[in-house]
Length: 319
View (cartoon, rainbow, N blue to C red):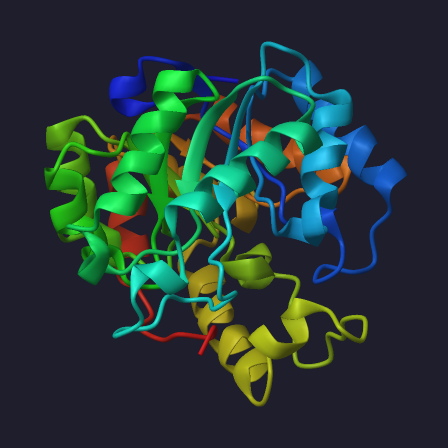
């Protein structure tokens, strides 16, 4: 496993991190805690040292699982949920209804209890609205958490498919990292966000690198998910048919190129120097081993990256 520096934090994180939404259960069904624990342990054995979780994942279940088995040398990032529980952040809603000072502090304390740690390496706001940039509450909360030692570094998780909404925020110097959707289909962060993050030495967590499973190449028109699973909404209507068409076109252009589609998708993200770590969801040992192998293979050659540039797909399945 290769490592990269997480922006100005100075900490070296594994190129493949662990996206821990799925192991929280609730919205990602079909897995078990035992299977998740085996996957996490195998990831640590293979050199993974960064986990991204959140207080809301399984109502704290993901954090508790991570806290149960993560070694002290594994860096943990978590997130403060919006108080109004609206994803993404809505324009016109005041930050007092979403991230008031006391809510940020209480949420962090609860995460620390769940994780069984005295300090979390990275605390993030789970949504972001550029209208909040001048508010004193979230700034003071982050400052107080860092001063107290309960949080080492701070960042935001940018709204789905809205990378430019954090442009002015990272210019302020008030945060250390951003988390953003970045994958073969959504290449929009490359236009403004990633170049600026690289220039300002802001750490970048690339989330949804496999497009919620679309870029695994295993979703077809007959794919079913358990009742209540988030993916039923994400792939509703004719969206699975759309995915099949785009993935088949992608596979055709990648014929003869070494590596599975998921590995190529992860290497696509890692080919951008602004990216500090990529955080796919992983709930099985098999997927852990395959995804970590993507780091070992290194960035993609320029000719393959040029092919993938042609497969950007402008759409929002979260809507």
